[in-house]
Length: 138
Image (cartoon, rainbow, N blue to C red; front, side, top):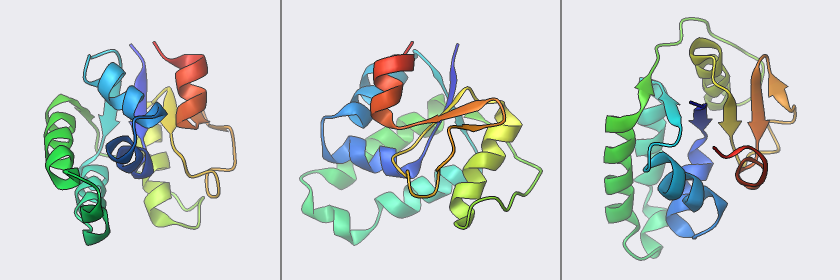
C-alpha cells in the first residue's frame, strides 16, 4: 500500500473546494486506499493552521476540519523523525522531508511548488495534488 505525506496546504484546500485535494482525502484516504504518514509535529501544524480565524469565512470550515482531523489522527501511521534537516528555507517544510526520510514514504503531496522545487527527495516523489490524482492514485 502506498505511503503518503500530505502537506498542510492540501488539507486546507480539501476543506475549501471539491477539487483534487478533496478527492485525495475523502475518496482515497478515508476509504483506506493509502497510508497517511504523520508525525506529532505535522499533526500539530494541521491543528494550528486549520484553527486560524481567516478560515471562518468558509461555511462549516471548523466543523469539517475537526471531523477530518479526528479521522487523520486516528487512521494515520505515526513516525518520530530523528534526523533534523535544513534543506528548505521554511523549517515546516523540512519537517515534511524529515518525515519522508523516517517513514520511507512513496509520495509527498503538496501545493507548495515555491519551496518544493525538486521532483524527488531520495526515494519519495514530490507531487501536486493534481499530478498525484492523475498519475499515481491507487
